[in-house]
Image (tube, rainbow, N blue to C red; front, top):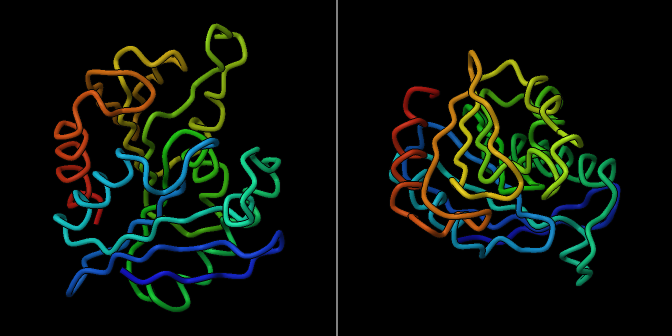
Length: 199
């Protein structure tokens, strides 16, 4: 693994690179609002992507690198994310078809910025469809705006809701809640079987 500090408009971000030999593609994943890149579902998704011959970059947002726990505003998250992906596309991941995504808040960032990042698909782990107990505050529009293939791996009892499938949107339900740790092999299987069809 290689760790890169990457300048963004909102301070340095950090990318944890997991390259594979002769990659077929690349996957760039962001973390959730309160967690980091060591979340168990992100680690397992990284292993699954590597098994599908994809190099992976796990990205820490600048607020996390700076040691802050509270999440930055959406516009700052999006701008920092785009800067990191552009850096990786010009360098370490140059020439590879790129899947962007993340867990929870990181998945939302990837959906909102899909046009700017040039991704070919989006991988969402535990997409937070609405705040717990507030289904009227839906974020479905962020998913609906993505016209590329999307894979959502969602816990069956996730209090943040269950996103609907769509024409290019596959939803795989696994046992457990928003942490996605109830059945990590099922998560890995979903990721590993979806990626080759995208790339």
